[in-house]
Figure 1 (cartoon, rainbow, N blue to C red):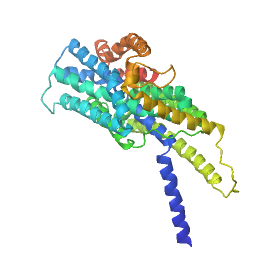
Figure 2 (cartoon, rainbow, N blue to C red):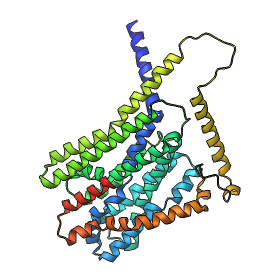
Figure 3 (tube, helix red, strand yellow):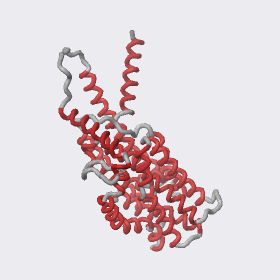
Figure 4 (cartoon, rainbow, N blue to C red):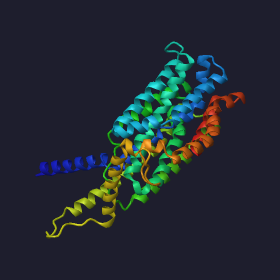
Amino acid sequence: MATTASGSSGYVCCRFFLQVITGRWFMMFASFLIMACAGATYLFGVYSKDIKSTLGSDQSTLNLMSTFKDLGANVGVVSGLLAEETPTWFVLLVGALMNFTGYFMIWLAVTKTIATPKVWQMCAYICIGANSQNFANTGSLVTCVKNFPQSRGMMLGLMKGFVGLSGAIFTQIYYAIYGNDSKSLILLIGWFPAAISLVFVYNIRAMKISAHPNETKVLHEYLGIATVLALLIMALTIAQKKVPFSHTAYLFSGVAVCFIMFSPFFIAVREEFYTWRNREQLTAPIRLVDEAPTLPETEMKSEIEYESMETKEASASGCSSIFKPPKRGEDFSILQALFSIDMFLVFLGTFCGLGCSLTAADNLGQIGESLGYPHQAVSTVVSLLSIWN
């Protein structure tokens, strides 16, 4: 009897574990991790000095490479078109491959493991590596917005916030693993985001939308976690500037940052347990009736929205609808967006608004060098910029 009971308990645990890792909340947790690793372009100011010294180039050549970095980071049409025709796991897989290839080649060049590449080759490497960020954005952010359509505004803000924090997160992790070695930072940028995408490549997918009463509460908890993470990294950054940290201290700092990053996992387990418990209650013996079962109004609305969204996506995939965009607020296909006046206005505003800040961020390393700042001071400025970004 004891063996039967333990076997039954193990089966229930396995079923619950499977529900957790295939559920919406774990998918959201995985998406936040991917987005927290998708902002490596903010760290160019930290390792740009190594590229400059390796190539023996001047400031204009470095500016050319930063231009290709920004071009790769902001041209997301390719990833969008690929997401229209392929599953999400393939988009994330391509992004992971591009990320590792681009930054690994830069690391090989900076460490002089390979022959010094030409300028156009370095521009190609950094453009490929930076463009992988768009594949992570398209794969995880767009999927999360589809899976949480009633909270898309909060979801967008939170996920882009984690992207902004990624530069500061990377700084703490690379201090913990490699110490104050900016060349190793390039290697970390190459393998760490790719590994995260590969681990969760099958968890990020569009799911059937179902009503959940705690959705807004959970997003507020995520906002609290993001705020605590930002404040912790800011405190660590300032402390590391004021007080010399040993490698052990950096290791503890990195562990603390990673713990807070992974804390949403416990929220996912809690919400799936809530769903599991309610499902068990609903499957209790009930009186049979002849009438057809009716869904709650909120769930019926979600089912209708899900079906209508699938219908719109199917109808928008045809070439005949490119010049017939839907109403504002509804989903556009990639080609419909490219040929719409709304997208042109968004592009124009982004082009004018982001150019100055990107130029400043890309040249932080050279600004600090010209002012005589030590390398760690430049890392501190980059981390603070990433946090408040």
